[in-house]
Length: 294
Image 1: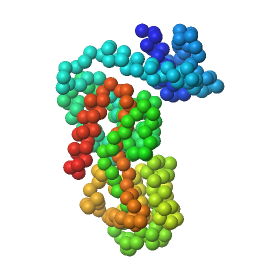
Image 2: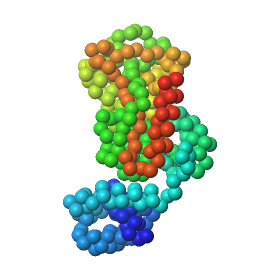
Image 3: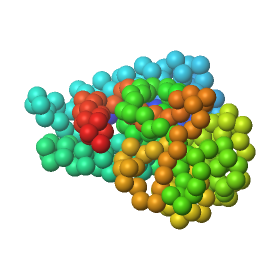
Image 4: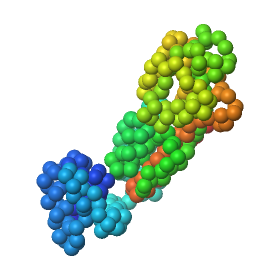
């Protein structure tokens, strides 16, 4: 049905913000996308976009229609797809995760696929910010990410657990005063372009300490390996997946109590309109159970 295809292209353009980016998502040429949108505007009797160069942003009419078109497409997909018997699941789900969550998620997904042979689950790894963007744009259905306190439009957020943020040093480093250690030891900083790194930077400024930055890296495991080898010290969340009591070569120190509770949230962000919400709810429940046992 050409009208349905045109509506899917319209949603892709609305989410991506340009015909060229939408063309990649819907597997068409940019010219074909442009022609479809002209045809849709003609059929609906009004322009839907403000076109400026490569950009194609929704005008007032387009913004008004977007939620109704998304609901129509969701209803069409439900009608088109036969419902599986009660207790079974079928279809395709795309879910992402930050690196520290991927191992547990992969175990859960492997088990689900063995239980439901008509269920396809595609996994992708990435940083929280890019995964949230993919959920918002509809590229994936859900993701396990670091909470930011902001929920992208059209999505919902559920917290799984918290990870306390602590000072981490090599066992060869003496002293228990976080401020003194941060002033005198080389500091290994986590990427400030990520939410966790920005949160740590705010904590350091609140602490009134300007550390001697030695390196800034975007992989927590890499930072911890350098700390273990006494290259420097760091401030990081205590990953839920690590056995910190058995972490050879590392010791953790709490940050000063006057900072208040310092932690980061890990949870699931998902689109409100995807079709396999029963499956993401099951994944969330199983992940919560495993996290409580850790």
